[in-house]
Image (cartoon, rainbow, N blue to C red; front, side, top):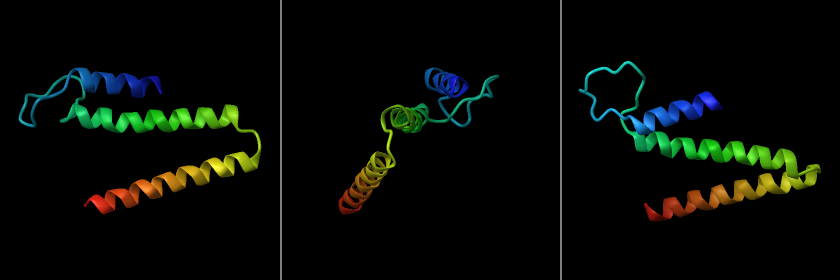
Length: 84
């Protein structure tokens, strides 16, 4: 996890401006905003796993949480489709 966060920080704080830019010694992304955009959900999922492992003890509690997460994602998907 520390290596992932280090790479995200490197890509965010020292981006390459264009595809035609000279090659750098360290890996970079083309768009630093996409790196940050995709790293935030990853950190959120990690936080959710930690929360579930420390807070929810019974199988019924975990099942309700999983169903709530699925329902929220379905709702968000429907809302995105309605906007398009």
